[in-house]
Length: 356
Image (tube, rainbow, N blue to C red; front, side, top):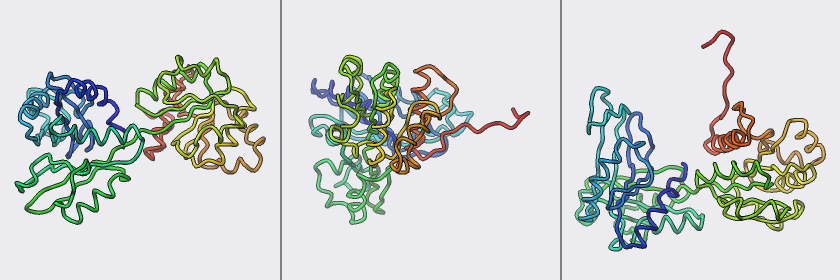
């Protein structure tokens, strides 16, 4: 699941500083074709400003109206939108999504100790797994709709099965439901952490890669041996900038922390040293910029270490989308990393002659 919390944090920090409560919308169930999957988040301020998306803009206006009531009363609401009838203009939107969505709205403010966002935001910034559980349906007056677990509240009121699910949820890949018949239904939401990307080389073509990955709220570290290239003002999206000689990479960068690395220094010996270090790392995705002949030369120079890259090295890096500009190449690299993370083939199938 992709990280959906990052886009909410700016609005949350602003309203929290002003001590103004907000409403958090969580997509807890979908049926049919919908814009988002369960776990999608939407944060709405009392003024109607919002961050995040649940429906692609179709339902956010209506959700904002309900959010005002939730913020004023503190009482959570479960809203059900059914757009499966293509002739139905529910809400006057004519969305044509042909799906149904259940959205839980809860207040997040001083009275709630800013939970569950406080717990999730702390884990997000520390890049550590976390999860919260929310009562999404309730017939138990002691567990009202919107009750949050995993954010300081003892889950002893939950069944053993639900407690076990909540304890295991931080490492889960997707949200889940746990129902205690006649009492409640618990929606368990794991925090989807953004991938950590290591960019090895601070040339001009690293800039669009950084910008696009930054738009996705990825955590980016860039390393280069040249101080004038790896300047902080050039790479504002970077979480960390490292000045290091390529052969010293393992001593200056914790390689086990990264989900993907892209080698793009444009210097043959530097790329060889980077690849040698990466070969001994656990990083599952390694991309190498440059043509196949250059790749083959580098692998030959690596000798036995080249075998350690088998199944992980993508060279030339990026999906073959046809673009040649630095921006197009950056798009292809980010797309390939996304496909790899989501276990998709991420390739364009060739069409047969004469096909349309």
